[in-house]
Length: 167
Image 1 (cartoon, rainbow, N blue to C red):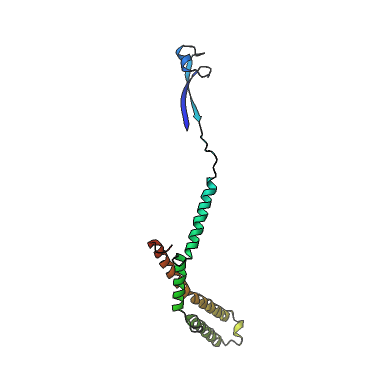
Image 2 (tube, rainbow, N blue to C red; image 1 turned 30 degrees about the horizontal axis):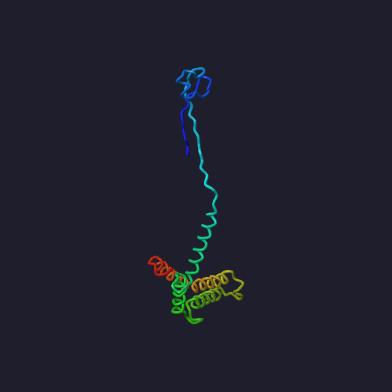
């Protein structure tokens, strides 16, 4: 707490108290006032509450993390929806859209090689670029259903969390 007070001083700059001023005994006469500020700080006794708070926080965090994986937990709901959605949209190996992209890319590369009369098509950077781009597109397309299902499961998890149906 801060405490401010105006103290009268004489011409020499020495403080005069009220009794001395009233008796006219302030040496050198009264010339003005100075402001004295006194700051008092009340210190709290040291406690070990920081460790207790950290312990409670970590304990609650750990319990919440464990609850996520219980049958009614939010993460468990996310994983079950993701697995269900992936099982419903699974296609047999070699029959998915990524195989179609690979086949179309290989056909485009072969068309380029034939139209340019390339005896050694793998020496052509354009031919290799077509095949590389085709593989990249097939890889992205292969992950697209998973990303869609993960996004859908995440939205349902957040809706359940907001409604309070999962922990």
